[in-house]
Every structure is written in structure tokens, then in C-alpha cells.
Length: 118
Image (cartoon, rainbow, N blue to C red; front, top):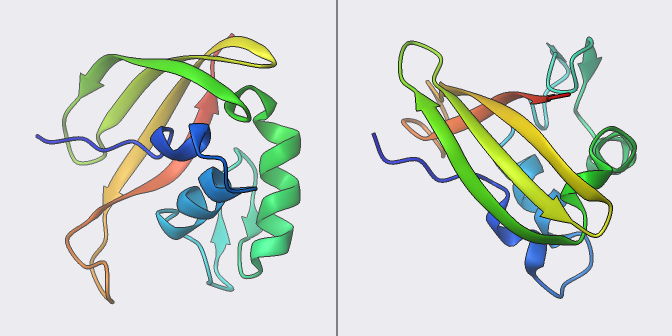
């Protein structure tokens, strides 16, 4: 399985570009349906709301300096474990992925949830 994680663009100089990419590849983005992307139930219809939640939930992903894919677990809902190092320190994250079943990104792996490790 070829895995592209949305942590790559966080070293871009464009303000909030990495968060915009995460929103674009978030399974629940632009939908009024509830999502568990942040670990709790929330609609992700508006980017501005996503932006605020993302900055509060995952500050370690902002100002990213480096990352390493630690492990990929394949299955119906693949899990990608990533170690990141950024301006706010180091932290492990797990990206839960699902295959998009409809729309412009049909067939793409989308992030259904990001889980911050301890």
C-alpha cells in the first residue's frame, strides 16, 4: 500500500497550508455529518471551525521540522503511526485512514481520525 500522510505540507511557508491540506483529505470535511476526526463528535462543515480545533488539538503538527513513518498497519481501516518533531516538541500520532467511496476523491485514502499518542 502506498501511503501519503498529510503531515508533509506542514513545512510549507504558506500560512496554514498544512491545515488546509489536512482539511482537504479529512473524510468528514465539508459535511454536516458528525465526525470523530478530533476524537470527539463534531461537524467539520466550515474550514474556520476545523482550523481552530486543529490548532488546539494538534499543536505539535504546527511548525513541523521532521517526521518519520514508524509503522503502517493495513486492513479495512489502515493505521499509520508517525513520529513528528516540531517547534512545540516531539509527539507520536496515529492517522486512521478510510477509502473515499464517492465524489471527486473517490478511491483516495482519507483521514478519518488523528490520534495523538502519549
